[in-house]
Image (tube, rainbow, N blue to C red; front, side, top):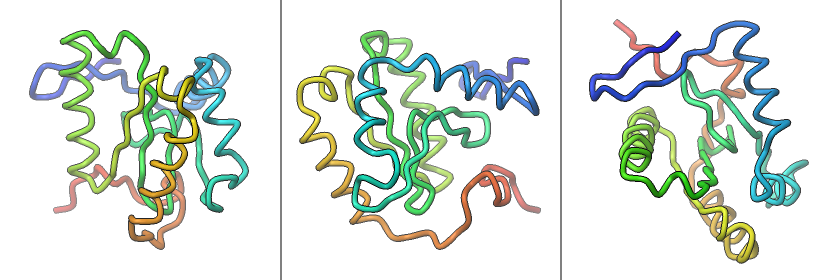
Length: 148
């Protein structure tokens, strides 16, 4: 099912079993850059922070996510250079930011050719952000749900 935002950008909305299967599919079909970054951050290897991959933040799937710090880490391939995709990414990032998430974006090339800098940037950002003290997102109330 497609839901459109007020700016006419489409997002795929996954619910129930489709949501889980889509996340699993994305984990199985990672890009080389995503695989390299995942190998460097999984199992609390980066500063002891728990990083998840292909995590749902409401209707938005993010490449990597640290619940403790509410940090989304995106790895952008060449298709993110198109004007349409850049506009879509900007709207998506703004929506996440408005709900209290920080976003870092790196290109595939940055991860593949300058991994040390990417990891240093992520760790510096994680250390700078305050801890949320909240349980993992999947076990907490929907951060996008409007309260009356």
